[in-house]
Amino acid sequence: MCGICGIMIDDVELRHPHVGLLLQEMMESQQIRAQDGAGVAIFNKTNSSDTFRIKSFKDNDGNYVSNETNSSEEKLDENLINLYDKDDCTFFSLENEMTLIKEMGLAKDLDKKHGIRKMEGSHGIGHLRIATSSRVTPYNTHPFSTTILPDIAIVHNGEITNYDMLRDSLELEGYNFYTDSDSEVIAVFVASRILKHGDIERAHREFIAKADGPFTYIAATPDTLAMVRDKFGTRKGIVGYNPGTKEHPPFWAMATDLSALDVIGATAKIETPYPGKPKIFFRN
Amino acid sequence: MFVLDIDEIRILASKIALKDVENEFHVLKNALLEKYGIVLPEGLKTAAIEKFGDIASAPILYENVTNSIIRKKIEEGENNITIKNPKALYRIGVLGFLEPVNLNLTIEGNVGNFFGAFCNFHGTWNIKGHAENGLADKGYCGKFVVDGLSTELVGQNNQSTSFSHGVDILVRKGCMERAMAQARGGNLVTFGAGFNSGIYMSEGVLINLGDPGEQFGSGMVGGVIYTRQGTTTGKGAVIKKLDENDYTKIKNVLEIFEQELLIENLDDFSQTNTKLAFTNIKHEVIDFKEFEKIIADENSIH
Image (cartoon, rainbow over all chains, first blue to last red; front, side):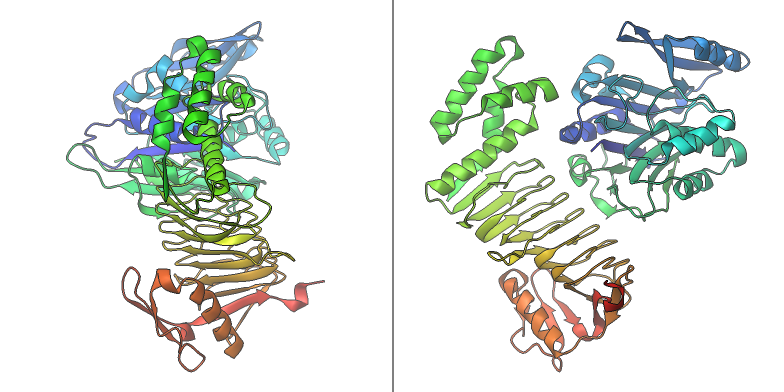
C-alpha cells in the first residue's frame, strides 16, 4: 500500500513554483499508507548545466551513505561503468536538471534532513514506500532513476508480477539493474523505449502492454509528468487541478488518495486516469 | 448530542515529546481516561513510535482514540455523535459491536480508507466530505450518506446474511472504481460510478444515476445494476430492459434516501410513470426510460 504523488505547475511564468512544498504536504497526508521510505524527484530547468550528477549509496556495513559524483557528458559512460564495478556502491540517480532525494523512514524526516518544502521547480514526484517484494534499504526506496538516460524518475504503487521476465529481457538488451525492486524495471523499460524511438506516450503504452500485475506509477521526465495505470485499473490513481490564485500558480496534481489532492486544494477536474491509457501532462 | 473534535486530542498528544515518552504517554493515557473514559492500549505506544517515530503524529493513535470514544459513548446510551476535523483518518467508524447499535454519526470532513468497515448499526452516518477506499467494507447493516466523492470499492463485500440485509449507501458526487465489488447484499445509489463497478456482485442493488459507466458487472453471479443506456458490461454480465418488477425495486431502494434526495413523485413511480425529480442539490428530472439493467449472464454461470 505505497503512496505516490506528482505535481505539474500549469503556468508559463512559473510564479512561486513551490513544488517541494506541495509534494511534502501530499506525502505527509498519505503517510498512513507506508512508512518504510520516502523520496522525491523535482525538476528545475535553472539547474540544467553541462555537468551531470551521479548519485549512489555506499554500503558501510549496513550503514548507507549517499555519494555524489560530478561528470561531464564525455566521461559519463566511463564514470557509470566505474560505479557499476564497485561492489559496495549502488547507483540511484543520474541527474542534470532533476534532483532526486530518497531515504528510509518518514516523509517528515526527509524534509527535516533535505528541506524538501523549500525546493522549487516546474514539476516533481513523491513516494512513500511500504516494502512488499524487496528489502528495506535506501536503494530500494523510490523514486527510481536509470543510467540509460538522465533525468527520468518513476514512483510506483503495486506489483509487477512478471518483473523477472521483463528484467531478463532488458538485461539481454544490455541494460543494467542496481536494485532488487520490481519498480526499477518500469524506469529501465520506459527509458530504454524513449532511447529507442523517442516517443514517451508510446513508451508507457508499451510498458502497459508488456507488464502484468496491479500497478499505478507516476513517471517524470524534463518535459512530462504521467500517471499510468494497469489495463484493469486495479490500483488507485487520481488526478486533480488547482486553478491557482494571485498568490500561487495553477497546477495539476496526482496522488493515490483523494485526501492528498484535497490538502493542496487540487479538487477541480477530479478524474481517475483511464486504465491502460497514460495520462500525460507536458511542461509549459 | 456528543461532539468529538479530534484536534483536541491532537493538542493533548502534541505535548508528548520524545525525550520522556514513557512518562508522557501515561500523562496522555490518564488525560484520555479522565476526559473520555477510554483506556489506551500500551501496544499503541510501541506501534506509534516504531511506525511513525513519535506518538503525536501517528494516525493510528487518533484512529484508536476516535473509535474507542465512539464505542464508549454508545455504551453510555449516546446515539448522536459528530466528529470534527477527521482529516481523512483511516479506519474510523470500525466499532466491533456484535449486535446492531443505534447511532447517527456525522463526520465533518473527509474520511480515509475503510470508514465504517464491518458496520452493524441502525441510523445514518453522514460524511460531509469525501470518502476513500472501502467505505463500509463488509458492512452488515446501516445507512451511509456521502456528500462528496468516494474513491474505490464503495460497499465492497456488502453483507447480506441470515441476520443482516446489508448496508444502504448514497454517494452524492459519485463513486470512482469498482463500486459494490463482490457485494453480497445492500444497496448503493450514486451519481456516477467508475470502471468495473459491480464486479463479482452476488446480491444487492446498484443504481447509477450519473453518466453511463464502463465495464460494469464483470463476473457477477447475482444482484442487479440499474444504469443509463450506453453503459458497457464486462464478461459474465448482460444488459436487459427494465420490467415492472424493476421499477418496484428501484422505488424501494430510492425510498431509503427519499429524505436526502428530496425526490418528487416517487409514490407514483412505475413502468408507466417513469420520470422522477431529484431536488436535493439542483432540480434534476431523470427519466428511467433511459435506463437499463445489468444482471448476471445465466449462460456464463457454471
